Image (cartoon, rainbow, N blue to C red; front, side, top):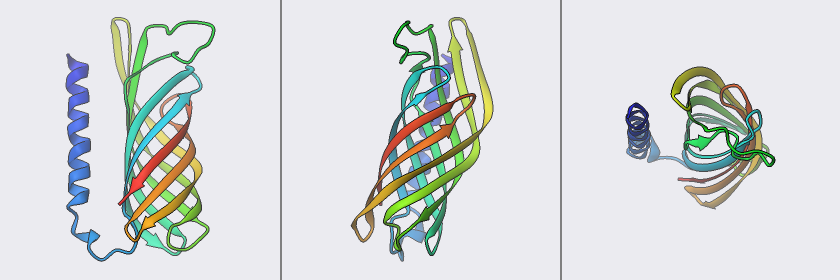
Amino acid sequence: MKTKIFRTRNTIVFLIFILLSLCSQSQENRSSPKNFAEAFAGVEWNTLSGLTGLSYERLLLEKGYWTAGAKFNHSFQYSVGNASLLSDSDGGTAFFNSVTGTVHKFFKQNQKGVFLSGALGAGLKHQKYYASEWSMFYVASEFGFGLQFPLGKKLALRWTNSLQFEGQGGITATKLSIAF
């Protein structure tokens, strides 16, 4: 029951964050997309767990080839050890939420083409193993590279591959996002 309330509250906060960003007045005189809605899939290597999730990034600053922003990550609940080939999952589940500051370095003007990315922030990971349940705060970080393709003046498609640290282990993730 407590976990369901926790997930519902996180979903509501995430939707309010997106709604407020869409209604932002700073969007009117812009030349490039500022909002990035993203879906990701990855493998958490220390537990051999496959996972999926959603992210939302809001760019706050653009200067030359550099951008800076804020990002919210949410993973869906996943079974710990679900990607192990020689054994079954051990019955544990987990999910995480994190908020990070992001930096992107593009190699072409107007935010297109190849870029390097980095993020640093904080997160909360919730785990359950049979009858025990716990949450832990952690330092969240991410490093990666990707490609961004403009689809119009205020619309773009972004594909990113990254190494994320969400709690105790590293996650190799691929992400696809639409920018508006």
